[in-house]
Image 1 (cartoon, helix red, strand yellow):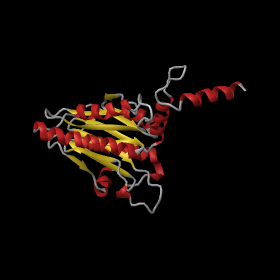
Image 2: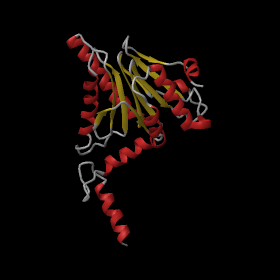
Image 3: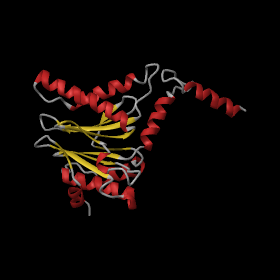
Length: 241
């Protein structure tokens, strides 16, 4: 009886994003975090000469065209992103970020800095945690690129609007298994090629027999040319032993 009463009380507090539970939790935010945890794995690695993105597209049917699944996003020539969670939510954030980058270029005739893109995404995410009638974005994103001065940056954004800079990060269902290995095997001064090999190796170890080149996407932003480049299947095969 007491357990049923606790469940009913909890259900009441999770019906509105603007209501804290008695123990200080926003339950819909926690549900959004669980959505990210259930999403296909995505990884980002900051290297000395660029930033690397690797993601699992998790193709659920042989009838789906692998190239039609989009989890790797170009925000500007020098900024890329990938996501875990509700990819439809990610597309909304990416569309706003792309527009923000274009407006900045037209207004100031310079490329936008990466932190401005991250803040644009996270400001919208945070608004959705305090506005009645909305729900939190059910997606975490890895956003990275190369600044004007050649500085390589990678950020992780949480569903509720928190962001922080990192050297390497993994989000989605594989984070528990991959993150300890990423911490052990990441090295300062890694090149983009070494970062790609490391990320693909970790993804292969996680997916095991389910790993294949149609399922995995990889891209990088080169530090010298400051250009987002997505790798083909043939290029991926050369990097995987």
